[in-house]
Image (cartoon, rainbow, N blue to C red):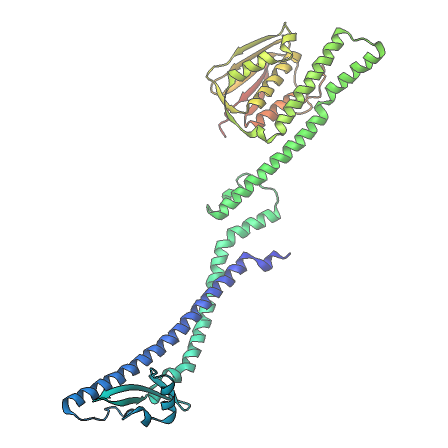
Length: 417
């Protein structure tokens, strides 16, 4: 469909010009009608005043005077009038304006003089201007109507162009560049067009977030679940050969089964739209719940967890995602810390630090996907998932390695938000 043929721009011009033409036509008709009414009233007043004069003189002097104006004639009765006028009177006794022949106009006024009926007739044919000037007036009105139509077309075009220019710019920008950057709506005026641009920007961002979550979910599921499932498959293969499992193999089986559960919970939480619903949360409450219920802490008695978090620290986040984040970081410390120790403490403001000793030198950013140490059984998505969770919570996460200390630094209230 060619949308330009049905554009709002053309619609506004047609509507505006149409309204102007209709209003002008109605005004012209009213103007002509008013002129005829004024002309008729003038003739009626002249005839009425002359009739009053004749009646007055008759009362004072007892004589019937002739009308003073040459176009006035006094008839002694209706039957003395021309036949066609008399016949019209018989059809409508209240009629005061009569047409005789092709172009003769008469106004009549009946008089009562000593019980006798007389009729004063005014032949106003020579004095009518409306009928004579009708062609000229009509042409003048048509010319004026054409000028008004031209002005209306210009004004409609100008107003439509000025009003719809932001909308056309919005349409062209989306048509030429389907991607929408941050601040897209700021280019448009703060009116309905700006509101539409802002709505489009928000809708596009939500769509992009949904697509990104789907893409990340598919990638993470296809990668992160391979390691624990591979371990479980290897244990099952050994079980088929030996019919028995060692305590170490049973631990592998249990740990990786629980790990699969944890990964699935994390990925499903990130994939849900509810993950973006934030609320005020007291961090220490969630931390204590995670520590009490963590599936690996109870099996590693030699692991030390030190917590030094302010009880007043409150963060804006999602409780489920925060639990998954802390679970992931604790599990990572259990498996990879050099001294089997993890310290969780809060810095100034809303910064939370997870710190443990490490003897491994990271050549790449540990948060990046597929970055891992040689002894890791995973494929390097553990800390990458931590970054994903922080991104979903609108937090900032950074890694710092210095003096044998490995720190995950999470800022729950970035200044740029």
